[in-house]
Image (cartoon, rainbow, N blue to C red; front, top):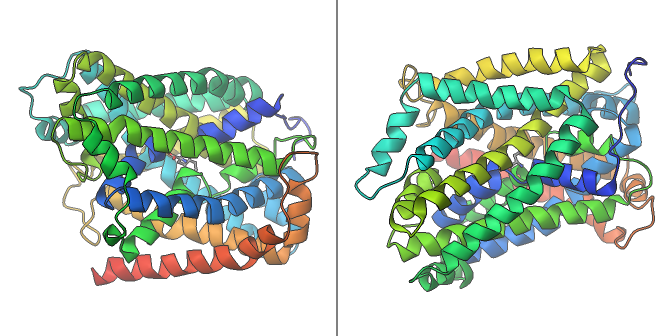
Amino acid sequence: MNDLQERENWTSKLGFILAAAGSAVGLGNIWRFPYVVGTNGGAAFLLVYLVAIILIGYPVIIAEMSLGRNSQKNPVGAFKDLAPDTSWWLVGALGVFTGFVILSYYSVVAGWSMAYIVQAANGFTSDMEFANLFAGHITSVGEPLLWHAVFMGITVGIISAGVVKGIQKTVKILMPILFILLLVLVFRSVSLEGAEEGLAFYLAPDFGDLSWQSFNDAIAQAFFTLSLGMGAMITYGSYLSEDENISDSAGYVLGLDTLVAVLSGFAIFPAVFALGLSPDAGPGLTFITLPAVFAEMPLGTFFGFLFFLLLTIAAVTSAISLLEVVVAYIVDEHEWERKKAAQVVGIIIFLVGVPPLLGYSALSDFEFLGMDLLDTYDWFANTIFLPLGGLLTAVFAGHIWGARNTAEEANKAEGTLSVGNLFGILIKYVVPIAIGAIMIVGIWQTFAG
Ligand code: PHE
């Protein structure tokens, strides 16, 4: 590590939990989760998802935080430190690369959300054609490019300021705002006339709705939403002091992330059903179906504005964790100054995000397995990189560094929760087998379908 740059520590337990929860809570919860539930038939999928979060998400998040805190390093440095003279550091390198790829298109989608804050402020009215409005936005170039740049600029600004003055300070302000906005939107949605039908869709399971694809989607969603499989939690764990119990902190992060995802469903489905729309619009649910909902509901413009503000805030607190993974790697391993690392990496990521942004206009001829460029980036990240990173991290924590070392690190400080034998079984066998299976099914289905 660079002697000139002391490694920072979160200044409080709350600071760490909010930062990690901020990373977890993002577009994955508010944009992706509802449409994945919507296309998988609702309540039954929700149950499968919750099981995946507990049996797979919880052990992996503990493993990542423990690897990070024990080594006090970025993902590459962590594997080097815990298994010197082996090739395991490549898992960390895969993570850094994945962070790079995800942030590049994440910022494009976050840019759409920013554009929609402005759009909402100007008013959504019932005579608008929302599918055309959205298509018009993403097929243009200048505006999406501008918002993509603004979003990356904000992310770089926060990361340049450091772990405590940048990340921790930001999440302490933004996370409470996020919760309040979300609660306001949930109350608005469930109090609409005709909300019951949406509640039934969301809460009354029909297991006939499940397919293999549902299990696949549930596990992939669990990884993405908890920011697992690419070293974000290793990096955040590396700034955590020895006085904090990781089993507890990971539990809080998991709980908050799940709460926000579940509440997003309550904010969205009752409103969608109340206005007679369909929940299975896919990625367009947030940008096409919801504006139509806001156009019809009382004070819809105001709530629409709040919603896109909420979505953007959630995206910011996740994007900073993606950038931090790459920056921590460069600062630790290549001894760059933080600010310079953040700026240079930020510009490169911005550029890497330009092709998926243009995938709806200049590069719309590009097609990979029937997907546009943005979906292609997303497919590689979610179907290959994150599960692969998670699988290898679990194997490393369970078998190489060892489940016992991992559990010991997690339980180091006094806490309410502590992990033991069950954790060992999950991290050594259940997690790798489950992820291996979904990866094979996911890849097979993509190529067969
Ligand atoms: N968890 C974030 C979300 O739900 C996305 C993310 C993935 C962030 C991986 C960091 C690392 O939007």
